[in-house]
Image 1 (cartoon, chains in turn brown, purple):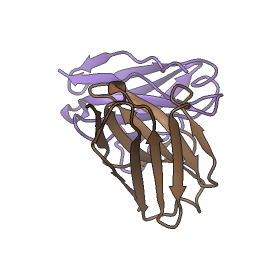
Image 2 (cartoon, chains in turn purple, green; image 1 turned 90 degrees about the vertical axis):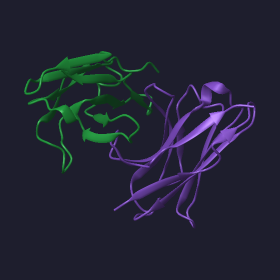
Image 3 (cartoon, one colour; image 1 turned 180 degrees about the horizontal axis):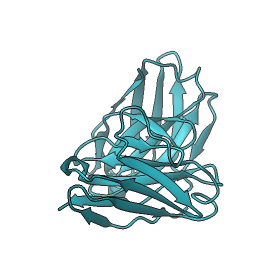
Length: 119
Length: 110
């Protein structure tokens, strides 16, 4: 059974780069036709799709974040990562790493990690 | 991309049925059968309830059902129970190859 776990700093200063890693167990990020995805949720708000890295290594991002987002992977560690540059307080959110199986079907989800942007 | 439109809140009494709508456009909900629904209890991780418009994952109660007509998808909860009180989100694939979520609906069991 696939499980995902986010890791990374819980506090980032404004203008810096937010960096998170998702460790996947129970399945390989490079051998299945899945999309390895980042989704965030602002405090008390709804869900926002950030983007994904496909099993082939190709990526796709939310147009509203595209200029600041990079999703990459380390297949040797079975991990994929999120970098979000030039952060502001508006980027404060719970960040989830998620597997997308079949188009638009997000399952399972990591536990989520709260990232606060503050000086 | 614009978020899909969901009602902010829906309520019902135990045992009743409620329906949550999710309205998009022909470029997302109306154009593809890739609509899914998620349940999120406070402080918890979203849980997949319905995928590809009307399919229910193993382990999800058959009280939950999904459908679509035109640009609007719907989630129906029948035999409403106290444990169904939660936030519900829809999501859809889009013609831009992105994914878009609805704003979420708070379900209250009266």
